[in-house]
Image (cartoon, rainbow, N blue to C red; front, top):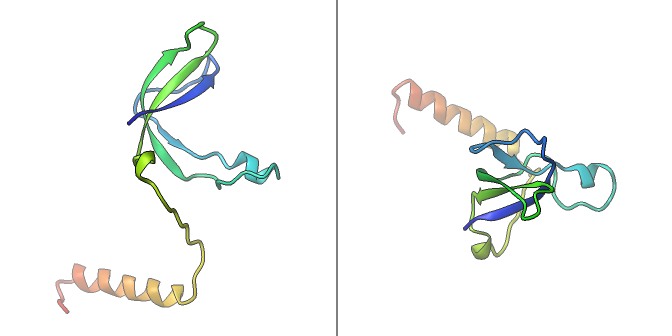
Length: 101
């Protein structure tokens, strides 16, 4: 499906194909926002004039179908991450050198 991003100023520099991400502004300003900066939302598929030509709106094709999202968990820190990074790095190095496990 498509989602609508409304109330864009007429001078907004947005174009088809642009990636839309969360701004994080409400979180950073202390207004109780829920989404940190930089979470990907989707790609602009069209830019159109609002019905009364006062502003623009963008049609955005989300990266996920919002109707099918049930639970989302974002992990920002976990124990053992140094070990996981080291193991991931060694797997990349061994596969690029032609070694197999």
